[in-house]
View 1 (tube, rainbow, N blue to C red):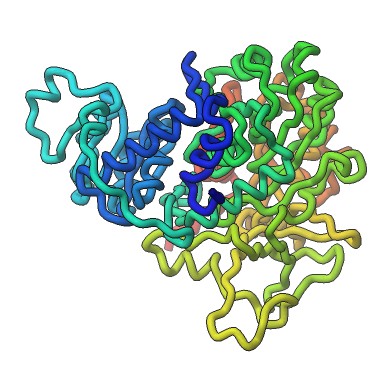
View 2: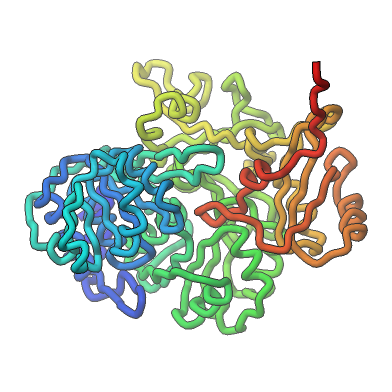
Amino acid sequence: MNHHLLHQLIAVSAARSPQAPALSAQGTVLGYAELAARVETFAASLAGIGLGRSERVAIYLDKRIEFVVSVFGTAAAGGVFVPVNPLLKSDQVAYILADCNVRVLVTSRDRWYGLRDALAACSDLMAVVLIDGLDDELAASKPAVRLIGWSELLAEQGVAHRVIDTDMTAILYTSGSTGKPKGVVLSHRNMVAGAKSVASYLENRPGDRLLAVLPLSFDAGFSQLTTAFASGATTVLMNYLLPRDVLGALGAERITGLTAVPPLYIQLAALDWPASITTHLRYFANTGGRMPRATLDRLRAHLPQTRPFLMYGLTEAFRSTYLPPDEVDRRPDSIGKAVPNAEILVLRDDGSECAPEEPGELVHRGALVGMGYWNDPAKTAERYKPLPRAIDGATSGLVIPEIAVFSGDTVRRDAEGYLYFIGRRDEMIKTSGYRVSPTEIEEAIHATGLLTELAAFGVEHPVLGHAIIVIGTGSVDMATLKRACQKALPAWMQPAVIEMRDAALPRNPNGKIDRKKLSTEFVNPFVVEAAPS
């Protein structure tokens, strides 16, 4: 059997090695054959309660076996799964459920009690599945929506819908740091191609044990499941509280692969690592933003035998580039080249290709390009566009043009073809006639070692256009910090304001520092009030 459909990733590994461990969670280890059987049963159960083809099933749970069964069972049933970040609040969850017309919600009793009052607008919801069953209060209640316990659901059996690889199978919602979250629609083909691509360059294998610390609603978090299942490896699900818990799990579970985002790596790099971890941790991979050089150096000092993979991706196309470990010493600031089965272009605004070292927009073409944003033609048209005819590989005779993802990220490509991230177009700071990347400012200041974490952004300024603001945490004398900035940054990149916080900086649901939230909370001291008329 080949991997054409998402749930077949599990079925193929089960046929090859039925007793091999697929999942480890809360002290329970589930083999591939048992996981495949549970997925098949759940798929038939959704059919039994009347889920239609391509109808949406939301899963609002922490990382646990029922989450995985629900997701892959929905795919097998011919439905579309919508993984909801467990850190979201009730109104945020209700927005997602209403936005994509969810028909079935899988959650727990505690989460349902906190959520039910916010679901009045979710008129399409027909059933709520409670993994821990109904208590006496819920059994006696008469809610507008059907409540059903997990075991009761599994007794309902029907026939799953026919599925092909171009059918949509998932809607992954972006973090929503720039407004209401957008639902990225992905097909079976998108997700299976992504799993094969990532597993190939990470060289995932049956003996691997991958630690899932990122939210499973995040594309890179969900990838820990798909890449493991594509290669017959084991995923260890972890709902961590502190960075030290992650470090403990790496040793206790003998993890071979870790994927995380820079804010977590910054915290992990500051800890004392047992020397034994590098003997079994085969690789660590970074995604969700460029890792500061100082953090990368500390991690490599802790893990001399572990291979670093620096990656770049976007939910709209899953994963776009990676830097092979052998190139890290030569170009540690690069995001690498295209992942297998993808092509990455750097284009000017007119659609022509940029020359080496010329900044342009990163454009992704290939099998990983998603199906657009759910129910949002305007935003879809902004990101998913026809491939320009002048590009090599575009064929003028095609009546239906190929659609590529225009990322909105500015990058440059060197003479050897390696890519370097500059910044998001909508976050670039325009100051004193210069276009400045907030990422570049953050990395330069972080390299001084004076701040624990920081975020840079621009605010309106009557003379400069934008003034640069830096908000950070750490114990440092302000005069020392300003001198370090003057040494590390040119005049036009100097912060106009540096504000220190006692508490950790806010993060969005995917674990990244929420630069947008910080900028909207910041009171701009440079705004000039209009004189009264």
